[in-house]
Structure formats: structure tokens, C-alpha cells
Length: 252
Image 1: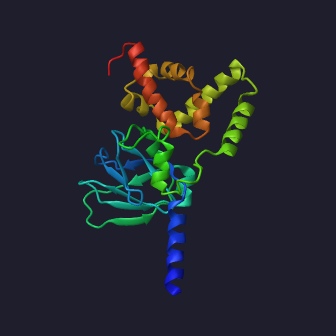
Image 2: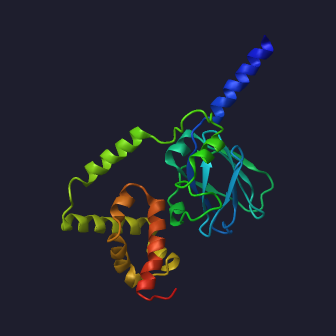
Image 3: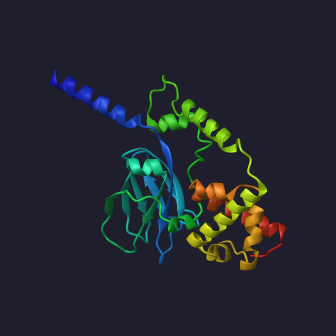
């Protein structure tokens, strides 16, 4: 009888662990003195790995309680535990150090820092989360295949649609749009500085105003910044800088 009870407990406990919803976590590996390119980031529970891109950023599927390892030959490996706070933020930054012998095991409570937002989340070895098939997600989560996929949140979609309609129900005047754009430029400049444009995007300081106006015509930079979509904003600016320089025939 005790064996049966123990077996039942193990089955229930294991089922609860693997049925947790998977989220896609964006992150940046940080160190001012060593390279943060091609660092391996692994979800040891889901057995999924990726590598940081040229900007030291990555994207990885995770669940609550998963153990994430950040490792490379030239850094001290770090193990991170995914907490509720991390899942809610959807973004993290990981400070790494050079040539340490012992692995640091920490509970990650820090959200992504301002410095991490200077980097772009680019392509990884993992599939794009927007295109990942539902069957693959169910396989990773080890869910019951007889159940319907629960990743589609109808209430969330309705709520998002309502917010979008409410937000766009009132059209802004040209003056209001201009004021928002000016406010964005001031705040963005304070946080990132002109070096982001001159050093990272290779855009002359004299062309920054023109470049931002070029980008703002395609997408509201103020809305992205005020909604704290900073990683997406940086990614957008990097992509638009290439198109802008191509149109303006500016060599890197």
C-alpha cells in the first residue's frame, strides 16, 4: 500500500512539473572586458540550448523553476534558477566573470538592466517562438496529447484587442505626435547617449535627428519606449539603420 501511495505521489508531482507553461525568455550576457559572443545558454530541464549573438543576447524557452546554465571556455559558468519575477518580466541580464574555477549557483531575481538594453536580440539556434509549432511546445512540456493545446489565451487576445482599440480610438494631432517624439528623443538620449548611434549604428551625430525621424515614420518610437519594449526598440533601430544607410548611400 505504501509503495502504491509513493508511486501515485511521484506521478502527480512529475505531472505538475512538466505541465507548466513554457515562456520564451530574452536575455543579455554582460561583461565589459571580455567577449560575450557565442556563449552557450542551456535550459538543463528542457534540454534546449542556444548561443549568444554578436551583441551578447539570446532567447530560450523556460518554465518556472528551470535551471539555466551560462557557460563558455573563457568564463566562469553560472547557473540561474527561473523565478516568478523573471517569468513576469520576460527579460534578464546575466553578469559573467573571467577565469573563475567554481560555478556560481544563484536564484536570479534581477530584471534586465539598463546597460543590457544596448544590445539587440538577434537570431539564435532555437526556433523562432512565433513560429514554433504547437506540437513541439507540447513535446517540450511533456503535456497530455489528448488535451487541447492551452497556449492560445482567448481572454488575453480579447483583452489585447480591446486595449489596442481603446489606445487607437483617439487620433493624435500632428502637434501631439511631435511633442511625443521630442520627449522620446530626450529620454532615449539620457539613457543610451549618442554613442549608441555613432559607435554601434555607425550613424553620424549630425544625422541622428534625421535617422530617428526616418524610423518614427514607420513606427512610433515613443510608444515602444514608453511601453518598456526596449529590446524590441533597439532591434528595430538596428534594422532600420541598415535600410537608412542603404537609402542614403552611407558607408559603414
